Image (cartoon, rainbow, N blue to C red):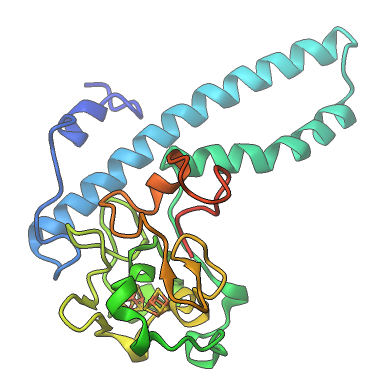
Length: 235
Ligand code: SF4
Ligand code: SF4
């Protein structure tokens, strides 16, 4: 073992069959914390290894192209700026970035709630589907320590095995941390969300709403009105 970044990848991640402790997101046990640290170190190792390789390749290429008079430094800077957004998106998709939201660092306690929805008249139909979306926490949420986050996907709200937020009461479909809920939960309205309602006014739910793979299945299913290109499965 040389200690080079990335070399301990197998040992840290423990193989594809490994899964987080069942308690993940339902109260942090010592095993949860250990698993979270392993995840963090593993991810840092992978990121550092990739970063070293990419940096060396790019620096070598740019040096060569500038030396040969094929590019100027200004052209390189301009191309870099154009590529940065695409690279960020791909890193996020590959799990190489944590999920957070800050809303300009506004406190959730001063955030103005979104459009009011008569949830009490609808929840028997929607079963609080909105609480199955992926929600990123803010640094305020994380510091506060009340909302549970997924140790395998920091800092997304932790989910139960059934795909719902761990803070959802499955019996009443009510939020058990209502006063402390994060900003995406405060600002969200399902009124125009075709992932939930085919017809909001008539209370006609999206037929695939109770599919175990909802909302991801919507992008794959031709039956969904609007076809592909749906909003990402998050608020
Ligand atoms: S999906 Fe809409 S109606 Fe149902 S609980 Fe969420 S906000 Fe309320
Ligand atoms: S924090 Fe509350 S409102 Fe937000 S997803 Fe969880 S149960 Fe739903």
